[in-house]
Picture 1 (cartoon, protein in one colour):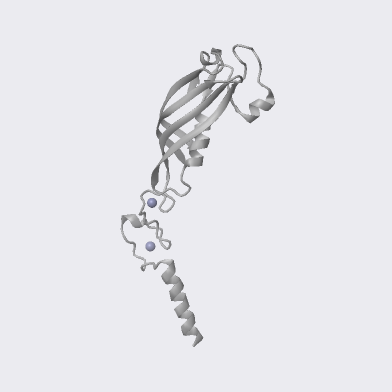
Picture 2 (cartoon, protein in one colour):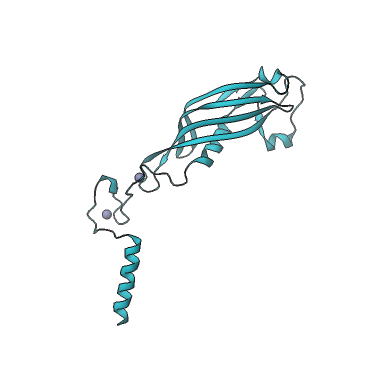
Length: 176
Ligand SMILES: [Zn+2]
Ligand SMILES: [Zn+2]
């Protein structure tokens, strides 16, 4: 998601610009991607560069934390970051190494790349345990079958509370 901001950087401080954001796919990391990103960015010319405020929504594509099938979660991405040009087109001032480490930069072609901050903030607002559906039955711990597709041949699993109770019962019996 790259935008040319040569005109924006030549405007006086305090000038605001609106950008429409629309991206069908944006890869986040090895096994996650954003789908149908839609939103707006407001660019404010500052004395150092552009202060970018982004408000967007998208679907995160990942894998279900219970059954590993594809899972989609709706997220909102909301952030504000200052982007500093490597070389200011008006003053010709070069960025210092310190500044380039601490902030996002606009490259020497005056292209502003929203891909990296979008990735970072999308990962932050992604659910840590995504589900393919709220009532996902998960995989059988014994045979690995996907229990959403129906029961597996293993004996039925009791839930943890019953297992704890059963263990107590066994202890009782052994104690006698
Ligand atoms: Zn699932
Ligand atoms: Zn099984």
